[in-house]
Length: 361
Ligand code: FNR
Picture 1: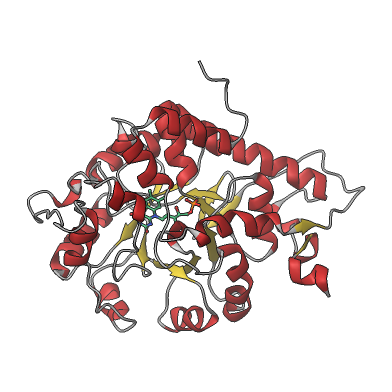
Picture 2: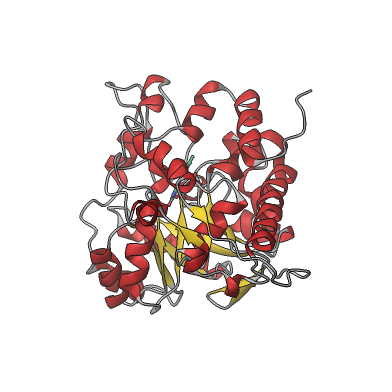
């Protein structure tokens, strides 16, 4: 038996051993040259600390509040597709782990458990991630189902007018399972060029005409707060605030969409400066260590989301694996707070980190 993992990267290796190659590649892969995939992680490595000493850190409070929901630490579960490819219990197991860690789960639009199953499985605070389909009424129905089932916010993923080119899925002729929430509403197509259904299905269904004015439509069909996921520039951050979003998620979709997008931790501050505290900013992409969580908060994020590590935990050890991933990250984050002299998340400031540019000048 493999040794017990001591960090999130070791969960990745366990997941690799546990999963069929096609599924592991689907989870682990990124777009094209996977430049941004590497950068998401490596850009964190280039940020160092300015730790403060002789601060009383005998008690550390990791908790924080996101949209009025108090959670145990600023670490949230990102929406990722098809959890049943990792474990037969799928998103239900992930939701239970989120509840026991007292954090928020964002359920993917492309989930393999239904909205209702996930809602019934735990009392976790849940947000629902949306893609907007050409057939708007399908999206509207799902919004209503999420609202009826107690989801607390919508996360509109706005970086996917078309699917990024993920070459591992093309090589593996990856066939995705049916979208559980959409059973009977959509048909699936296997592309004769690629042997995979994923790209063809997504490009057929996704509404590439979606634009800022459609936020008005979305607001007209729901009372839930709307966060936008996929912002990487000051221009779009300002637009998002203008249209009245409840929050922004700085994200490059785990480097699965536009390769050579900036690492999200490098794009974060530009967005933070543009938003000037008007709405909360979250970020995801490449968070693998408690030190990464700290760096994101120091640069202005209120919380981070984690994508692949959750799926790796699920593949390696089911619900318990997801719990272990979150708890491990929390423990590392707590230690980082102690060693930088920050007894609570409010004590984490811009002065606690130094970016690469600051080292050069
Ligand atoms: C994703 N992501 C994603 N995002 C989204 O809005 N809807 C989705 O259905 C999915 N599906 C998905 C599947 C898989 C396998 C991955 C790896 C990612 C992106 C996800 O929400 C998040 O932005 C990234 O995963 C964050 O980067 P890390 O933590 O994986 O490095």
